[in-house]
Picture (cartoon, rainbow, N blue to C red):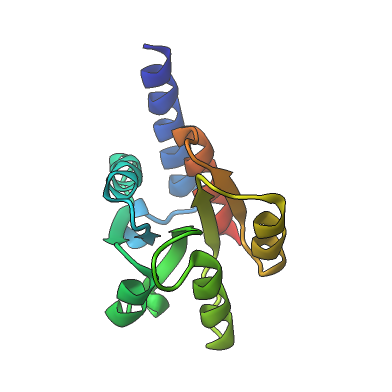
Amino acid sequence: MIASLTCVIAFFALQTYLSLMNVPCKKYLIAIVDDDESARSAIHGVLRSVGFKPQSFASAEEFLASGLESETACLISDIRMPGMSGLELQARLAEEGCRIPIIFVTAYGDKRMRMQAMRGGAVCFLGKPFDDNVLLESVRVALES
């Protein structure tokens, strides 16, 4: 019950904040890149519940192939994935001059990864599992950057 109430409060706080900015949530494309389907689905649901337009990808390569980099307002990415890692995706986007604010999520992060991500310009580095409100606050910070 308390968690549900907290989500409702977070929803209204984010809606109020975005309405003060005079920009509807649906205008923001939030890309989710994670090889774990359940993690992608959970993040997608949280973002959609507050009015964002989430788009999910099972890999960094799938995201890059989508051509949505220029439309993406915020990227939420796992660190460890088969193929290109989240940190490699971050480096690739930087090489291409694509300045998407990135929030990293990982179940296996360490201090070195965290430092590399933050030095590369990441907005946030969250350990799985994380609180939905922390994720939504991180998205808010990313959209302000």
